[in-house]
Length: 64
Image (cartoon, rainbow, N blue to C red; front, side, top):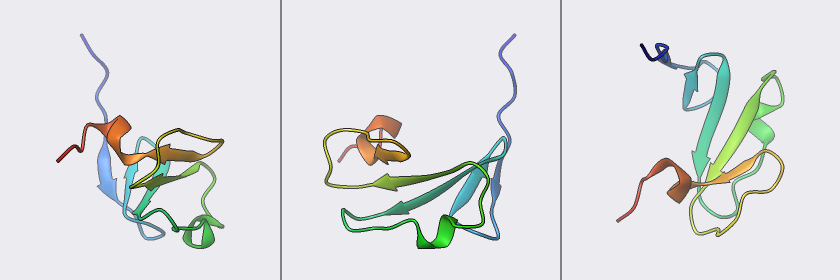
């Protein structure tokens, strides 16, 4: 049986999954909103590769 993923709204950013906070934005989105998050990631559109705590939006399957 697969573990349950708890997706919830976050008071700091866009959403939270099992304690990891995600902020969604464009190519120029920064970490300003995530400064108080313990495990925070910026998910950006219009980038090709992940780097440190920045993840491309297409890794989540949000293709158009």
